[in-house]
Amino acid sequence: MTFLPRLTLLATLLAGTSLHAEPMFFTPCSDTAAPGSLCSGLNVPGSYDAQGRAVGEADAMHVFVRKFAADVPAGKPVKGTVWLVAGGPGESGASFYSLLPTLRRSFPGFEFLIPDHRGTGHSSRLCKVEESEQSPGGRALAGAEWASCFTGINRMPEYAAQFSITTAARDLKALIEGERSKNKAPVYVYSVSYGTQLVLRTLQLGPLPVKGVIFDSLVPPQTDARWDLSQRSQVVNQVGMQVLSNCDADPACHAALGEPAETLYRRVLDKAQADPALLAKIPGKNLKNFLGGMLDVPAARARIAYLLRDLDQGGETELASVRAALTQAAAGLGSYPQSPLSIPLVSIISNSENNLQPSLRPGWAAADIDREEADLLFTSPLPRILLGGGLPTYARDSYFGALPAKVPPMLVLQGTLDPKTPYAGAQAQVQALTQSKAGKAALSTVQNAPHFILWTAPACFEQASGRFIAGKTAQDCTL
Image (cartoon, rainbow, N blue to C red):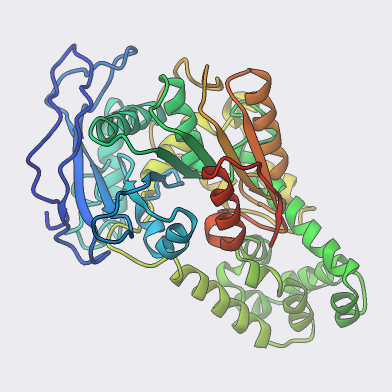
């Protein structure tokens, strides 16, 4: 495949033995996704046993890694390495490529290593044919590929289990330890969203040779039903209602509406339900979901009240403006061949580990979701997507819901208006880590910020990460 570099050094995979951490050999990438970057990867076992030893060698997989060299003058030493662990599950490391300028300002003199988790990007995929770069949809599923991909996975449930959080964590541990063996400069790990869960799982497997860990948008405790993925609409609604309340408290916003924002919104909802033509203007024909999605992008979120006013008056100007803001925000993350989200991996990991609904409320159905969301003003499509299932799940292992015994210094960057990994959930996770005496976690609160601080509040990210690597006390920030 065109994206793979020439590998001259691979890990040896022997049945019944532990994976030996080998350094990677990087060569110029043969793709054009990120000019000047270097590419490599590591062959890893398809399966590990409970002690982390390879189980067989015939089902070996490949984990792709891209490297961005440190921006230092010729002859000057590199200050260190930062591993960037993407979110998802299902998201590749490509989400960081366009954010390199912010990262270089935040970690001057550092090199960056960006892996694609197994099942994502250019690493081994669940559907080898349908998710290949050469398929009709490229890395994304398209047309008939959906059915053939899902059918193939359902025929091999044991194969789906090879894409668990724990197996991905063992991959990440092998990558970090292998590179550390050839470079003694300081190493940090940055992760976002699901990536924070993956790094916490990696730390459960044993200590990592790193100086510090940065968690951006930290996941809540895994066994707390308040923040289970099936509760995502409740989380989104709580943030959305705060945004409406903020409008009421802002003299300019309140004057523009002339009434409480919630009153206006409920009237617009009633109009949309009674007027199919109005509802048809809304992307997805679901106003609650659309406004819930706007909460992720500060520029769009700031227009929610004005969009409601315009819709109430029969206008379309604000809607066009909001759609443009959302498109621009998405474009800011770039589009690369490995960018498409792996939907099969999202389904398998989310339903296996982060959806407590089946065990808490057996028989939960779409009608139950409708009833729960009836009075919400902001919602997420995720609960219904998870309800659909369609792919096998894997059994939770002994690491489920647990915490690492010991962790390096940690910095947590969390927005107070995060509709995906709620601020209260991050506080609970920090408290749990502190009470378990696993290590010290410093929480840097970013007022008014949504999810993914690196992307949505870059100035705050730069300030916080700079203080962290300098050994200074964490400070709060405001978007």
